[in-house]
Length: 416
Image 1: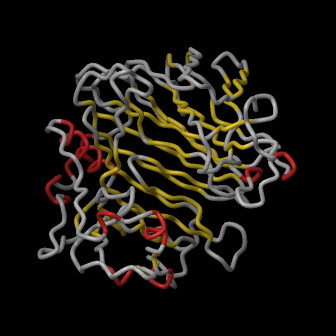
Image 2: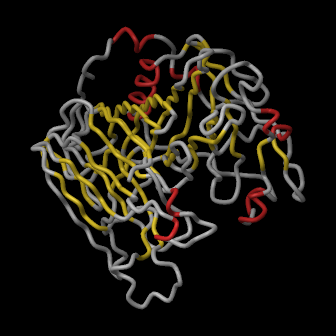
Image 3: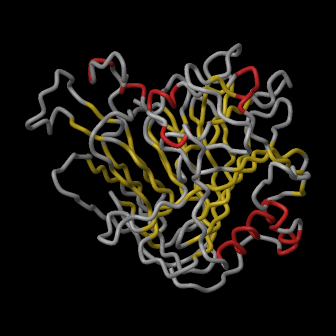
């Protein structure tokens, strides 16, 4: 990425004037934020102005004992479902929030957007139960993230369908599936000797859906040492859960290794590569391969592995039709795991919207040039958080440090 400016395709400059960026500055517990006009243009302007300033690390300070919670202690910090946002309002979605602590110390600010007006969702310990842990103070702590619930599997119960938690990670499920692999907003320097940079979603604006509408829109402001970005997710849960994603990136510096629509999964072993594996299970993985559908209509399958040393595989293409991490085996006998149920993990398929130009879908990749990009994320099954080995898969179109828009679709679904 080289630093220069690019006018967003399809974007009206008039949208940039809707509200000043300072209106969404960090919340102050003594001076609650007043509702402020918000739209996608405001968010892009915020990201652009943010990229013109020096990066500031997120607020990760927490009072004791929140600063040193163990995994088991943090598990007892549960959002009270009776306090869910939009509960009893006749909508197809509710929102539950994640408390800060354990690995998730960064403060994330959340806003509810109603009819184009954003209002801060304020933290209170009354929103949570804490098990045997002491109640946190009433300070304005913010949140770590949030999760979305909807009647996915049956009409009388709101299932968790998607979660945004940690750095720029997010994941989702399709009908009858469980959580598995994850996606990220942006990857920078993956597998580079200098180390990887992990951008963060620092603020979210969740648009309250209208009654009867079966989709929900989430807006996010991304920040990192090298770039800022504006993301808009239109999420449609179902048998196949689909995310339509529009990402606009504003680099602070030249970025040699940028990954668009990056995926993260787990692969430990399968029947054909279990050397020195002493385990009764036939296979342990969230995904078993990378599937690529090239711009020329060819399809490639790259089986995953858990090597002793870091390995990179790169597949160059022009305007790819799609790529994703798949979990193909769908029978319980393929995994024999009564707890993890890897057969219920989603696969994740990415479909670029519009021409992305040259790039490399790969088991870690990068490249540099900037255009307008959009994608669709489609969910498919299987994955688990316990395993060894991690695979980074991202398409790295050439980004040059002008602000650049990417559009795509992610879909999570089951398949045979």
